[in-house]
Length: 246
Image 1 (cartoon, one colour):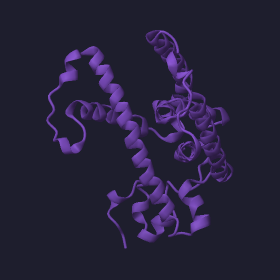
Image 2 (tube, one colour):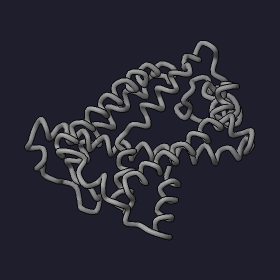
Image 3 (cartoon, one colour):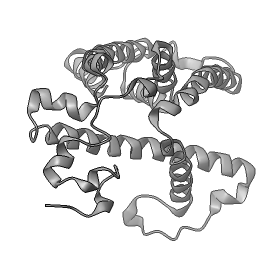
Image 4 (spheres, helix red, strand yellow):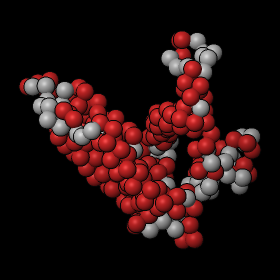
């Protein structure tokens, strides 16, 4: 059975039957030598740029607010990231050696049709994660616009309260979402330079932001000296939960 041509991202797959397109298309074949442009340092730059983000700061701050001391929160994040890094390296090894994409690698464990579950599961979680990160990016856009135009803070809300947001924040989300679409227009092998530049800019910006917060707060404040308020079973549960989130 042939499906409509617009159904396929690969223009060659439209000439295949539904079963043939599931077995072979442009996205499923091994990456050719000409497209293997990512080197070891490109991956290091990618993960370095990805790890230093607002979400990581929010994880630590939420643990401190929840009752952990700052060093306990810091330790949780390091342990969580380490555990995740191990599984990322193990799961990515097959792609690094055989240069095959995730859907093909999944077939070795789940079979041809069984692999649809991890593929759909991964795609769904990617949408959720992207939406979460895009909302944080939208909040940054709102801060930028507010800094330029103070009246934006009091932008009239035209959205119902049931949505849990307002027009001001939603516009910031749409702006960030639209701008981020520019990056995914380019093939993956061509945007490695973006992450290389980001791995240089982001740490500098993070250090500068850290210094700025210290100046504004006139020092570290009481957070560094305050002990954790969770003890016994509650502390262990909160500790385990934060590691599990990563």
